[in-house]
Image (cartoon, one colour):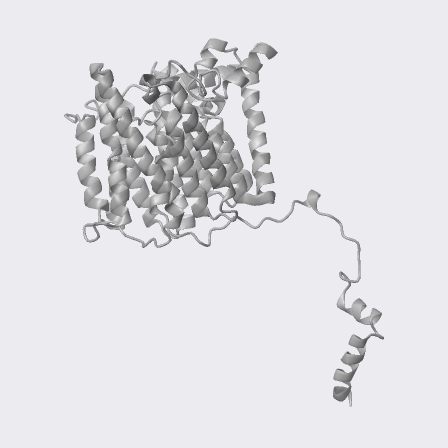
Length: 463
């Protein structure tokens, strides 16, 4: 950071202290201490100490301190899950403004975004981002990737597909700077966070009825330390950005299905959102949603095909994308909360998670956008409890959804779109007396009681 801003040096604890003061000054309702807004702020701010404890344990190599950090994160995540699970029961949602006007919020958002992107430019890119750009370049060159490298991937083929633009920029930047891979990773980090910011703004403008809650969500997203700690990890920012845009375009099931397909192809957790989305849309919307998902799945399988030397290699790569090869169900060397505990205890946790997803899918039968948002956030938060590889620390997976739920209005009128049947699904109906024109119906029923009654009514006017 000192290369761009002379003398500027802010470590992770200092960022937490400064952001704590800013968030409290802008968002805390001092006149309503026990309001829901203040409870949400406390829950969000309690995430950062757990991350700091984990980072400190990594730095000094203290396993006991890391385990304490994971317990902290699991406890706060459990409180967030309860908050999301009962969100739809909170029908009274007063619109509480911020302690800063719109112009000040806009300036704070812009300034914080510039500071975050400066941090992304001066730090080393995340290894998963560089790995994804490298595989994207092989897709463009149609080169074969080894099975070992493909099974150790941190993201699915959708991340490689979305990083093809960065791979093209890498070749151009290599000729000028010689450090094209790093610059391309920075560009992707900026683009991913910008997608989240714009998605939150458009979601508020189109469905919340005002841009003010959008600015509040963006400002809080940029100020929270958990965003700054993983600012360069593009793989963990892309899925929530795609989900937010899918919510924004929920009236277009084809667009939402395509965006959710890309999110599912990046990381595994969006797959568990599909039952909720299908139940939300109903029969006609679900068909369009699934059609878009199928097209994206074929596209992603095509990216695996162009980097496979034979059918055996393709099948092993396709199976590996589901995370089975990485031990999502059983992983004896998992790093995280389950590292120091018996892995068999994860089985009842996963069963409970499945029951939660099933219950949210079934009830209530008629869902609104409020149900879709809160249930989606609850499911993503719930994946933190059984995910073996450092589960509990992936705050960026659910942070944009969490903010959207916390700042949303009632959304009682935001129901699933009423869709007309597609032309090739329409049934041709034969002409019958029910479908006859009024003139035809009147002529065929000339001698009926209705005709006599009509004549008796009209006769006085004819005289």
